[in-house]
Image 1 (cartoon, rainbow, N blue to C red):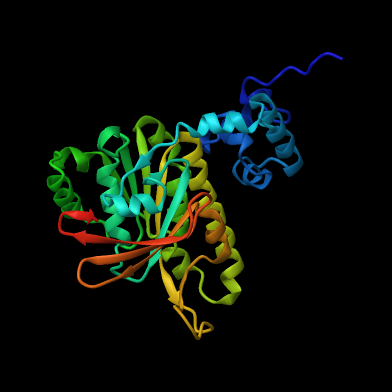
Image 2 (cartoon, rainbow, N blue to C red):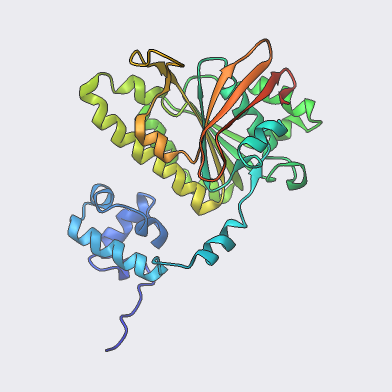
Length: 316
């Protein structure tokens, strides 16, 4: 039996004609990778094609990319490309395996003024440093959802590291998300920017604030979690595709059901708990001291460390 000819262009995919291909391209689905990693309902929504047709197109795109099984040694080889961004504290770096990892989502949750946002600022500066100094020589996209982004603070951190503050600020693209839908769109439309702008770090501060405000009450919980799930998977897809690091902060609430021990619980439930690769819980200590606890990681043991947030940044 003759081997089926592999599709070379979007129009070659089954059920996708020139008009549909144009619609897909306009919606940002301009490559086989994008089609292959989409869900049928997503394509139905953006291009108005039937779910069954979408399934066939996705299967054909996956076939062209040979997205199937691969041996573990091939995966190990690919993982050698993983980079790490230093947090500024060697203790905190050691806790998470050497710094904030690319191809992964690192989440920090904790009460206000526990150091979550400060670490985001520090990473946005550190990622621009040479690899030999714990950076990735790359640029940053910063999604600000709570109006907490402070260029003055970035300037201060850059100066304390003897870096050119103007250059450091130019390399950080900031978007202010007005609600959860806008936040999702900012991430969905990020591909071109990431490709063109040598982006090696995405910071979302905070990931959950808008979802918490837009979906109030138990009745809206299902929809909120679905949207949050889609959003966090879009971030993971960017991390995997472009070998970049994603750092997100998360709000907390007090769980009244916990009578003994710490009642502080992160927002986002199981969806976020499963999606974040590294989960850090930050607590405020005396003066500049902060305590970080590693709650979840695929390869590192649970543990705690102490770091400081000073005027010069995150330190041991």
